[in-house]
Every structure is written in structure tokens, then in C-alpha cells.
Length: 341
Image (cartoon, rainbow, N blue to C red; front, side):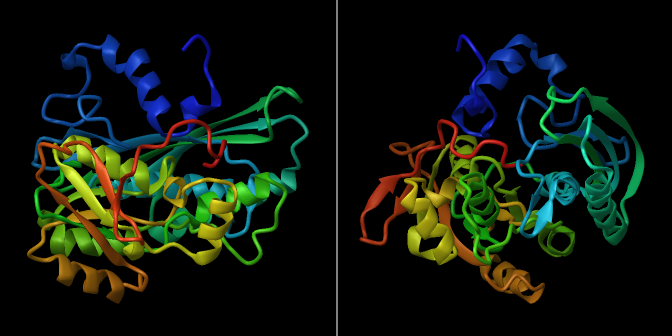
């Protein structure tokens, strides 16, 4: 690791390694979280600070560098708003406020910037989330590629969803996976997505009702952005100290996403989704939860597997293939699709 590579920002193994080296390994445990909360002691897409009344302040920060900044189904403004909203939701929080910092390259068209900001603000208005502050800077021409947006999302949680699946938990996905990653990958290769759109959207109307009705039965929740579904499942296998077993045929993937990915030699399970939830649900209510998710309009939701106790395969993800055998689904490595979000 003599120099920083694109793969260090891909959300896979290299990202985890550089975060461990730069931050986690250099901090004693007392500085990794606020007492009673959640932080670098259990890295997730958001952190939590106890409020003293049994609730938690949930906070997330993210920088968005997607290229191109406009794509079928959305743009970098929509992505920035939805991404941070969803990260708050996946820790069990109800989003209430946001801050933003926008850095723009000199010469960037003001009309395009207005489109991006309008997309960003439209999401906040539709979800009742306040924009409480931010920052705006300009870099000289050639020293930045178009625009970068950093957001801070803030929410309140009655209880946290700490990603530790339990033996028997069913793994549920709310929709097709890999749509966003496939769209960006096609555009970066100069191809037309041919009707395929990014799945970017806020998941408030899914997660808030779920938390209210089944919150205590959801033992892990994540949106599979960088690193895709494969990274989420590998994280959960390690965190739970068991094995995740999933059925390849049960995973909802659009045929065009699968065919284009396979043509490039990329597993679609490594591609990002920006409007999908992955849940580990208590088996006693898994069927109810699936039906409830579908009743909320997520008609493509599927149970794709389960979390099991296993000493032999602890920390691994086993994928039951369409041929009937099993293979290990490894966490993503390398730079598959740069600047995807």
C-alpha cells in the first residue's frame, strides 16, 4: 500500500483495509464512540450518540463523486440526498435534517448546477427533511472534475439496528439489485443503458413503517451501495460469526443487468444499488415482513437466503448456484466501477 489506488474507494476489501490502517488501528477504543453509542467500534454507514432519554441521535456523512453527474433515473443531487437519508434509516433512525457541502469546478454551467440542487432539494421537501446549513466552494478549472457533494444526514432512533444477524434469520431484499451500478458502468463505457434506469430513491416509505411495526425483529439492515449485495452479506457473515447461505435463483436481478455484467466479466452482486434495502429478519415473522414490504409497493421483494451457525464456514457467504452446487461469494476486490456514487 505505497500509494492510494482507485480500489481504495470502491467500498470493498481495499476500502476496509485503508480505513483500518488510517483510523481504526490508530485510535484507542475510548475514542471510537461516544459512551453508550455506536461508532468506529462497529463501523457502519452511520453512527449513533445517546440522547439521554433512551433515544439516539443518528449521524452519517458521505461524499458523492459520481461520474457522469447526470444519468438515467437521476443525478448527483438526487443521489446525495437519497444516499444519506437511506444511511440514517438503515441504522434505525428517522431522518430529520441534513447539511451539504458543494465543491464545483470553475466553468461548470450554472444551469446544470441549478438542476442538481433542485433535485437535491426536491427530495428533502418530499420527505419533510430540513436543510440546516452547508458550504459552497469553487476549484480552479482543471483541478476538479465537475462537482462533488458532501452531505451530513441527521436522524433520531428509538432503537438501533446493529448489523448482527442471528441464527435462522432470513435475508430479504426489497427490490432488484445492481441497477444503479449497471447504469453507471454502461455510461462510463460509452454504452447506452437502453431503457435501464438507476434505482436511486429514498427508502423512507419502506423503512419507517417497517421500523414501527417490525423494528424489534429486524436484526440487520443495509443498503447495498459500493460493493453491492456481496459486500453486505460478507460484512454480516463476519459480524454474526456464522455463514450466510443465499440462493442465486432467488436474487432479483434484471436480465439486462446480468447480461451486461457477465459480458464484462463482473458479478452483478458486486454492483451498487441506491434504492434497495437488505434486511436480516427473525424467521418467525419473515413471511409477514415480506408481504408487508410488498404491500408498501416493493413488489419485487424476495427472501434470498438465511444466516446460519457454522464453525466450519464462519465468516463466509455460500451461494447456491443455478446448477445446484455451492460456491463462496467473496467480498469485492479491485476497482470494478470507479466513481459510482
